[in-house]
Image (tube, rainbow, N blue to C red; front, side, top):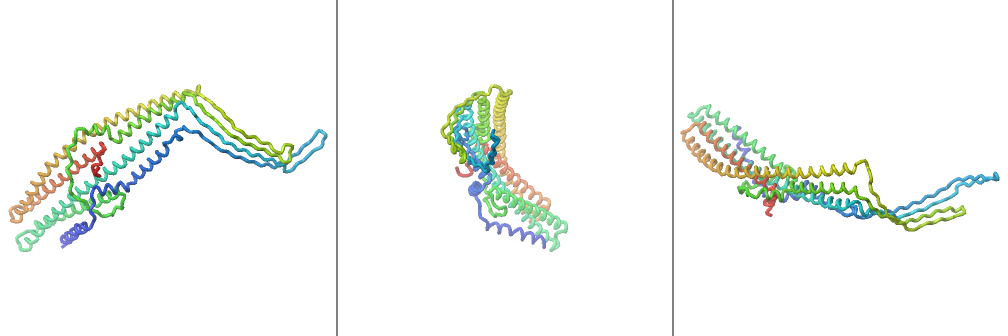
Length: 436
């Protein structure tokens, strides 16, 4: 029959899975950290920030240029003299050669160069924080998806067990019909329930395939790479009282906001530097040679050094310096306000996540007992059904109670894991998943 064919095809799934490599969470994180594109991009940005963080880029060092120019002229000349005589020269040659080395060095610019160097230092620190964020986000995403797959595998197994019970119930109904002690309605209802359970199993299996494809994406692998994972899910520990203290000290977003506030203060100092004078040293060594082979002076040469110092200060520029300073002060204040707002938001998030985690752990304990009771009830109902002591409806109700209890337990376990991962992300403790 068609129902037997469905069971046969579904029964091949465990055989195919048994040949797949088992993947641990530690191995998955290692693969993800090695292959992650976001981490590689963040590492490249760290390299760029490191390359930019030099005293030359800040303006400490002088600029030295070398120039060489040569020109050759061939001109037609015509002279007319007072005695009405004239002279024509065609292709009269002249040439000039000039070279020089110029040095320009701003030795004082109102302390702006010192401010720029401090900003470059902070940009480097920010790139390091971005790299840390990329690593921690990758670890958190991998851990969450890993546990999600494990829990959905357990849910798939629960659906498979319910489908198997429905298949046995259908077989009993068919056997009763064959020997004339059953009725067609009972067999029809049994097959309807069996097909409903089969559809639920197939949908869950498809959901699991999609979760594994997403997991492979997090590991930067092809979506069809086959693997299995251990379905043992650890119970998280209750949240400690120092969650917010850890967040305040180690949260990468808060660290980044603090660095941004420092940049705001430095930009205010940089804007203020425009009120100070600029002092510049200049130096050069020039060589010039002009030749006129057919003239009275065939060769003229000059060479030698040039030294100079200059100072400038802006007396009035349409109040633009004042405008830039005022805007920089406002921007610095905005950075401070953003930092304070983020700190308050993280404090609220820490409070809610701690409550969610503790509640989920308590709920897991309750649902474990619910599953045990529902399991005993389902087993007793099945025995009574085989003896003809209860109806199909009562048996089906016991099955539904069991699968509902199992689903609630899995949901509570996933909520607990999600809350713990979020807390570890906020406190920078994700090293727990890589054995650090």
